[in-house]
Amino acid sequence: MPHTLEFDSIELSFDTRNILSSIYMRCQTGEVVGLLGRNGSGKSCMMKVVFGAMNAEHKSVRIDGVSLQGNYAGKRLISYLPQEGLIPSYITIKKAFEFFNITIKQVEKDLPEVLQFLHYKPRELSGGYLRLIEAFLVLKSNAPFCILDEPFSGIMPLHVERLIEIINEEKKTKGIIITDHLYRHVTSIADALYVLSNGKLYKIKDKEQLVTLGYISAYE
Image (cartoon, rainbow, N blue to C red; front, side):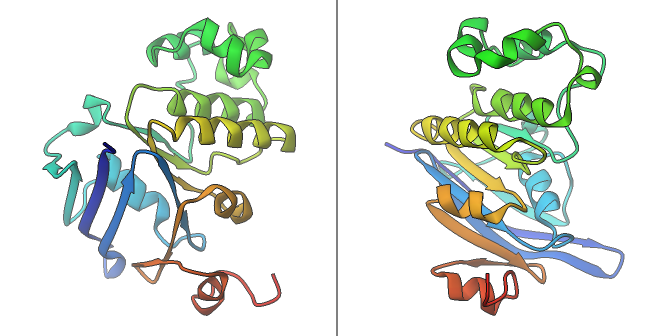
């Protein structure tokens, strides 16, 4: 039986600007939910609120109908890849794998090219390799739900393909919410798709809706 992460009634504003209003979304294990939106639309804020890293005026986040209260981020029910980076600058990649309970055998099986960087620290890696490793950490964590903010950022095409394969493999047992400005990658793997526009969330049924909401032009 699938597990369900759902959140609603999210309200967030900065000064007089309304960022999020009456947001509702659900994600089940076994599916990828894509989130699209223009830069500055509030996607990262929404993900941080759901994960528990940002406060909101109001929110309701539930797993299988049970409300998540207090500092639930530490319970590892949701694993989160922030846009600004994940691994602290002072630890090695090997330590990061250990923290996420990922064995070297798993790395060797799924991402063998990363083995050469085990003793590197984040600043010693290219941005693309670091992002690939960070996304891998989140996807392979024990959390039943993963939230990925810009996982494809700076990654070379070959590694994008590998990361998509890992996402499709992990969704067999997890629910994954993903946003990225490379929207074609998101739409190619999403089982359900939403657009965040003017503080509200819209479920997308066809490409024409993306045009109507101003996310893409009619010629894309």
